[in-house]
View (cartoon, rainbow, N blue to C red):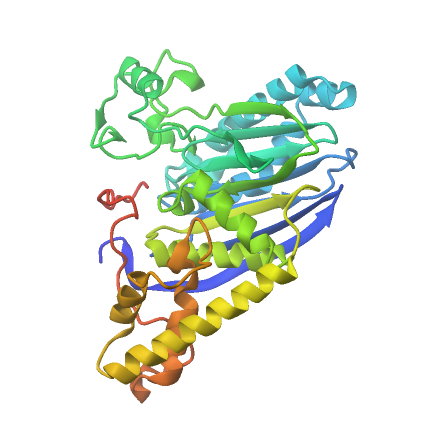
Length: 399
């Protein structure tokens, strides 16, 4: 399958924590990709800045070296800048923003000149980055590449960062001015993002600064005053956003928060659902909730229980009517059933595929030779194109 596995690796890494009046959960899954190249970071209370918190997701490509290095070092690179130190101590938004930008650029330069595998050319990987620094008064949200941050506030999408794609007019202009081209929506027909950390083969145009290269390490930085209406903040790689919109994911998360207050479980559900919809990529996300986030509702929990029971009954009815059907056909039949209500908004029946598959396997156990499926692993069918019907991008070793 080229750069894809024959079946997805569905084991997850998940965490949860709280502090500074916030709670967070995170989850990551390798999925259909040959290796896991994502990384993340979560620091509830910063050294010497106890009221500040930091969360980040890094989506690596052409290897996991740069994403791992960024996860371990980007925060330190930011908070050690003079501008950030001034800004954090004086609550100066301009200085904090300058410190974040400088931290990104310093980290990129340090990797290029001091990481042995990169200096030797052995490691040619790169990574997108989306991160947030949260003080008691402000949200500082930064993205470099096509990972995205989305802020839900007062029932709406208050902010969604802009993905850095080579086809974006300003990105395309910089690429062409640096002597490059955009073909099949990729830098020089190869790289699917126009900004990233690492990717030094795309940053060697003489006479041009680091932000004028084919690929720029410069982040966009968004600054928002915190609000009592802030619900939650999502940081996620494109393995999530390729298959679900910002608004749909916010709606889905609101519904899940009414079912469970365990944020790592909520994040695991999101990753599973995106796999069900058709994501072909590594998937990682961090979910940070604020005081206005939806709370667990006994009424919502009861509706969820009844929905699960209804789906189980319908799977049983379908199998009794035709014992030869497979689980894909069962899902297709249920997806056309107008009687099923109270499906999770934003994800609909995809959010319940695991319930459907588990019930199917209980009623129709697979042959003994497929023991790992019998233990709960989904029947493996390569996912189709993204939900919007657009064809998937061609596989590439660089993204």
